[in-house]
Image (tube, rainbow, N blue to C red; front, side, top):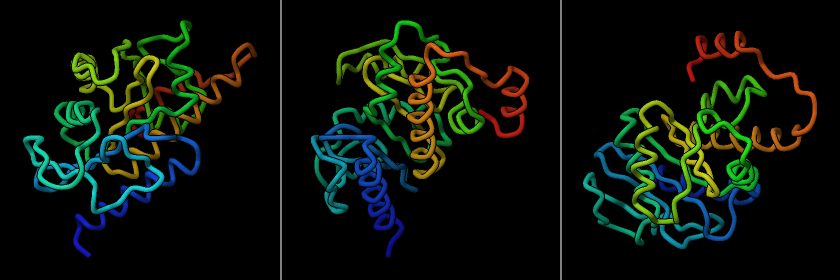
Length: 212
């Protein structure tokens, strides 16, 4: 099995896992992986993550031209922007996951760092999470807004839309996206209660130990 064939199968496996656990639905969400030649594999536009065909994944060259497969997600510019700003990124996951979207619509959140430090693994896998202002789906101005943050953050939350997360591997991008969604769920569950969050010192220690 060639490395690209294995990557295609892994994308489809991860996508179905996300779908089966309710982190994506319908034809929402998209995944991309950067290949060794500088090009990308991306999930196609209007495709459900429930039943992706590895052979029909969009294959783009380093210039972003489609060279094989179905047309890519219409949000491909979100992915390429993150890759441009983050040379270490090997994969990007974008979902419309329910709890993350719900948090993105709250007026109370800090746009500089949306979620509080509820767990150590959130700090380790996500770090700081800025909120990107709302733009209509497909608006290329959204890429500029994401690009302004992507150099310092590997995860951002699009207002009234959902998370976009880059990782050094597809697995790491998926794990970080899952951690973000679970932390958003916890945040919503804990609203209105007295909370014992990680202290600034504990957060600083985690960032020193693990980055983020």
